[in-house]
Image 1 (cartoon, rainbow, N blue to C red):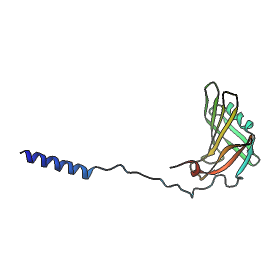
Image 2: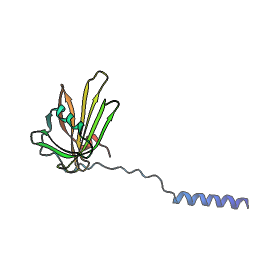
Image 3: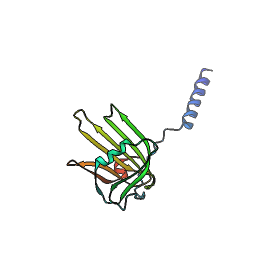
Image 4: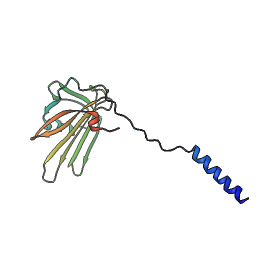
Length: 153
């Protein structure tokens, strides 16, 4: 009887091992053939960051129509705002109506020495390009990048 119990447990364990599924790692390969959203715009666009800072005064639901640069009009609706840590971090997210699927995220950060830094991105996960705000020698630029330079799937 003892041998029958051991044999039954062994059979059950074997059956369980054969039917159990292992965790499957799925690797999403980047789709480098996604259409370009900003193909007709230059790779570097000089901007006035203070003009973009006006976006921080908008409230959720308000419509936005801003000229980022000549020939680069951004229209949409504010979908999110945030003011944290006594307004040392202020942020706004705008969903675009003229660049399909794109969102502009703009953030103003003020450090303890009252130095202001701006960060921003305009991107759509449906497209292969994006703009990221960078600071070179105290001048702000939107620089075009590839989506997969920023995002890993």
